Length: 197
Length: 109
Image (spheres, each protein chain N blue to C red):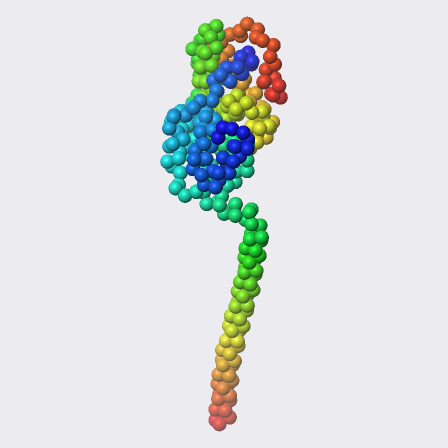
């Protein structure tokens, strides 16, 4: 499915006409996005792969309704996001303890960014499903709140406030665990300041 | 701190690949036939006159069927009304005969 937009569009049309090879190319082009969305929201690779397969099977059943390659990407993100939230709620993936109650081992920030990243991955898994989905769409897919709101069918204001709350929860949990404010970083405006509020 | 969190989130949430045979496993679960809806929808787009003709035929057929059903219902209602009137008439005739018979017996006595 790599190539010019015209090639991609042609591949989509061929898949809609019944070409299995073209559909396989669609899967290969989008599997990373769909799998990662599910993995980051659900936290389990096996479950994420299983649901990602279901998402592509659902795509195959609804292929005729896809109007363009960009519509295809949006469709996959939306379905994957909703399926992930439903699955989290169904399986009660969320820890019975809230993010704020769980004690965290103290880690010094200067042990490196990798630790911070690992810590965030674990903390992320404890956020409520909706918060997690919004954070994943924001930072994995680099979507702005308007796009996230469209994908998850919720008001933009809700997306902004939820994102703000989720980042606040993560920041407090990191502070509680002893991650210290590092030395001043490059003068790059934070995404949070631009979006939240 | 927010900036570091956001940077770390971007690192933590980088896209990852599923297992290498992922696409093959999805393909193995696909039905053998092509998605039917695509073919059905594609045909009228290429031949709009055919879609219009089919739609018109269906509309006319539906209207004619509805009218015929209404006609049949009307006929059935008419038949039932006539039957009810016939029964009523017979009952009234019978009652009349009985009344006349009783009157004649009284006069004879």
